[in-house]
Image 1: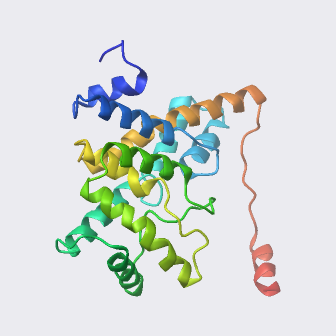
Image 2: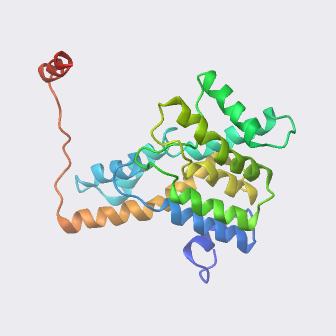
Length: 237
């Protein structure tokens, strides 16, 4: 530990992966972008739900992290990185182009598989966090093979998803590049990425929890429905 460093820089140093300033900088970026959140996602909402019972903040965030560990939430960046690696392997040494990746994306969908890293539950445009990471990568490691592949995917995949008529947001999200950025600097232990995600998100979740206490928000009690109400909905359809 080096108390003279900032929080993110000190964390990067303690990881013992890479001593360069660039790795500290990408860690600062990662922690800043993932420190967000409003309360709609699984980890933030779970933290709020448990905290609304006036549970200890540590208990509340521990519950949130259990949600973060789900493959549809905090494990998404690993899935994106693994998909890029698998795609690179399947290209067999070919230089990725928009034409090649367009056909690859079509073939992937035709097999009933998903293309991770694209789409978002709320956003209907390219995730601003992705844009920031892309700019960082273009400045610091533009020739990285996985980044070059991801960059071609940025051009090739959205039109393919749009053409299906089933995707509300075909644009890349923050997970599409976050794993690639960390991997470039030597953090190859993919299962650890969610831990960094959790370290980062603790800031946003705890800040929201403080505001919940300040505002005196009541215990959260989701609405429930009985079988008669559910039967009525089905009948009305």
